[in-house]
Image 1 (tube, helix red, strand yellow):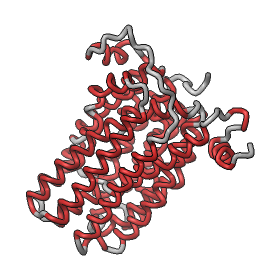
Image 2: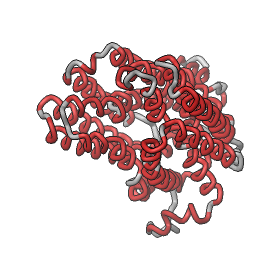
Image 3: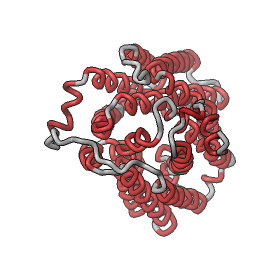
Length: 425
């Protein structure tokens, strides 16, 4: 293995020289660089933190601030079923991903321009519309990526590639947390607009780089498929493993829903959540740096066991944090809140790595896009329903909600136990 790119690829994935296919190492570099750029951009334009602060600074109505997360999550997941058939019919899936990334970049630049030129309700409405465009574009990238990955990187090496990108991106985002902790975002709109413009540029650059991916130019045989809605949803009826995967993933989605409730619980300790956002973002990104690559490598060995372990960890973390919240009425200050976010993020990274690799490896090439779209559409609906937990938190407090999350995460781990070992050839 004299090629330095192949050497690096072998070190990252654990593959031997004879196992690496022609062009695979180069494709691995394209994946890592492109994903690093988009994952960094995702964090820089995070609706839960950056955009919420931006709309607040622009004096946008509170209702518009409340729309940010639902628009982002639903927009990125719900359209995928409608896009799946088009992706399946395309000879190269990288084109969908590249176009999706480019549109996200343009939408992000639109948000930055609105922040600099507008204010109040007009700015809020413009930013929400731009975010909706960004979310729909993201759905195109999401539904096509697993196919592009499976076509260009061999099984048992895919998790290492995506995990490395997540870890590298988290390092760059750590600096944003430092700026938050320093109070920079509370001073002026301009720094926020600059960060969002940087995110838009990263999306555009990722689009250009991803088009250099050497993907086989072929269209899977789907002649027996009539392309109807019934055909698209048929797998959830006929494939018991897909149903089990979706049920497990839906339960484990609480690892994504939990952080805002931890923030709410930390705010009851006598300090405002806004004062603690910087340290919490730093804790979250530090956990991503440490955990993403490790979880990715574990998923290459067994995505099933990764989901089980991450679900069990999430159950333990939410149980402990919820119990402390009930006993003490808070988390004991910024250190306790940061520690809770750190542990919760490690569990979330495990769930994310495990469910991405499991779906990628379980589905056949011809129908991977629809499996992805069908799964994501159902999870998008589940996440919208997850908004009811916010109502429960208003009524009962965040600690009981976290305890409920602990039970649900444990259920997800139990369901994952019934999944097949799809990494075994």
